[in-house]
Length: 97
Image 1 (tube, rainbow, N blue to C red):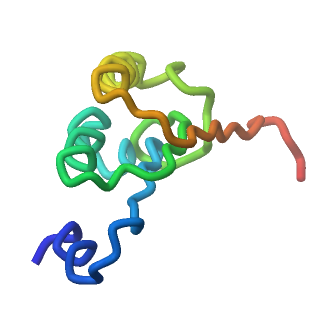
Image 2: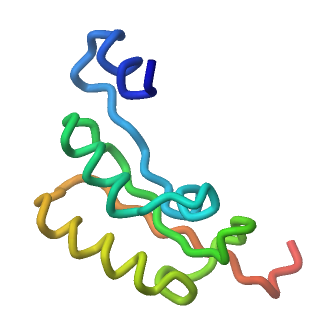
């Protein structure tokens, strides 16, 4: 059973997925493929944007590292006519919190 089957089994049309681009990159996934997959199943919810080197998720500025992945992602985001919530997550690496 795939994760998307779990969405359908719940039987609630308003149950959506969160696409966290930082986590997808860290998992070595294609951002565009993940977006299209959610769209094909009518499940895109919140899109949570950040960037990383694919080995950790330090919440870098979108497009600074995985530029081509993000460019492809935004191309398909435009083609899917997504009109939901988009969040940008950024943490200053020099922040001493």
